[in-house]
Length: 171
Image 1 (cartoon, rainbow, N blue to C red):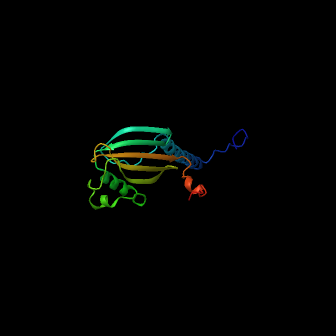
Image 2: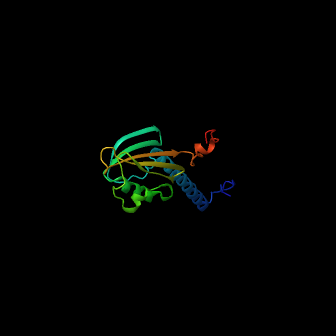
Image 3: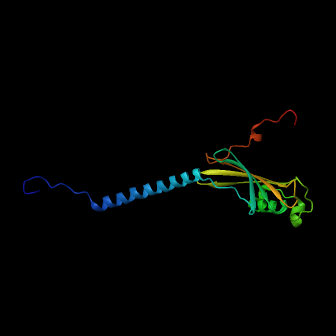
């Protein structure tokens, strides 16, 4: 009691207040980092794998995260196909003549050599990419690379359209 007879006001426990404040700041920082990583991923989704030494011919974006590029590589199609086979070995079929020596024997102008695909999870999202590797129409030693990606903002890819369709009467 004070000299005037009024009870002394209680002070909050300083240590408890400090621990509570630190916990609130830590939780706010954790949520802030999570939100920043999601925002960064939305603004700058990752690019699909790209072999080095290419020149971009065209670029098309149908919506945010759905893109297609066409590149011209100075490497032959077998070398490019082998690069993508390393990126996604389970989804890339390489012709036998490429596996044997990665030389231009067996290549013809304009032929498609390989198709590959893969996926990559980032932040809370999923990106799928596809590439079609073909021999240039003009020079057998150059390669056209059609690379596409689609980002699934829901975090998982929908089932394949073909799997949803009933068999056609022509099958």
